[in-house]
Length: 393
Ligand SMILES: Cc1cc2nc3c(=O)[nH]c(=O)nc-3n(C[C@H](O)[C@H](O)[C@H](O)COP(=O)(O)OP(=O)(O)OC[C@H]3O[C@@H](n4cnc5c(N)ncnc54)[C@H](O)[C@@H]3O)c2cc1C
Image (cartoon, rainbow, N blue to C red; front, side, top):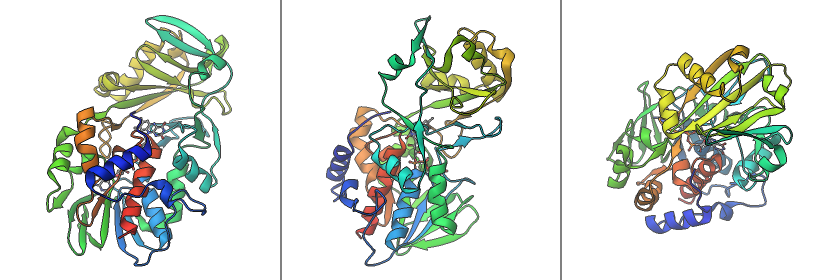
């Protein structure tokens, strides 16, 4: 995940695009949400494509400012790359397929969680031993030492999907699920057509779909050369896959392990049920890049088996405690096609600012055009930037 200071990104994007982009801090008022806008002088009809964190945050603030907003979402759920799995797990247990941790300086993600009254818990346990496998050597690291090298991440109690669900509840019927957009004709008005053939009209349209999916929408007129290059594969994305195993018992606790760690596969090993009642527990592997690609070619059962046979090296006997398993590949997810944007320095320099540029009445947002790619905070930041653009006329 690339980190870029948000102000720097906005300044750069604004400079490249010749736009007067409004920094999120400039639109924060004394009110109760981080992205609040002033009341609209001239209410606009706005269609937002995509109900991920960027689209939801933008829609929420535009509605509160008095605009007439419709959100069209391809999937039958909101949240996009925020996805909490609740099956095939024990009742009350869940695990994150996408966004899970919030660093302490992610003011927008934390701000909206607080705004909606969601409770936050530490991501990592502060007791037990963390597993560390480096160059084949297995070590058990006491929690204080493991945690001293990491930010004090928090998670949303009950699941990350409570945040997009809170936006959804506030937006109500304005969010239309199961409605993939196929065509956008920029004009006065903009005409947006969904797969079911229905066409809606708007004054402004906000497109928040990930770059690898932009080419599935017919834009007329065609998008700029830079956007066309990016959506043709010229803007690199990272792969990430998670495999989840439901265990009948938390057998690892017999050895003093807390179920978390890192290994030289490479992978992150997580125990998302550490603070929930047992006796069952979930362990998951979080792999990226070539390891994710390697798992992706396997079917579900083979993915789980592959991970279990790998875990036997440091969790001997794990396979004998398995109840079931599942996985999520973001590359195979037809409404994501990848995990998050990770452009090369040249792509970042030449295309990122261009991707954020509006084309007439069409605006763009998403984690890929933010100062915090690969994070909810970046997605929200970009949504608020686009909302401010639309709002300011
Ligand atoms: C494995 C993984 C781990 C992560 N971990 C963290 C973490 O720990 N903490 C954190 O803060 N962030 C994390 N993130 C990043 C975070 O999830 C994303 O940055 C953020 O959710 C992206 O939001 P978005 O609105 O930009 O895009 P998306 O969430 O992808 O939303 C775009 C929406 O557009 C919809 N769509 C696509 N095409 C169309 C169409 N034609 N018509 C209508 N709708 C369409 C999609 O279905 C989707 O709902 C993680 C992501 C992944 C994949």
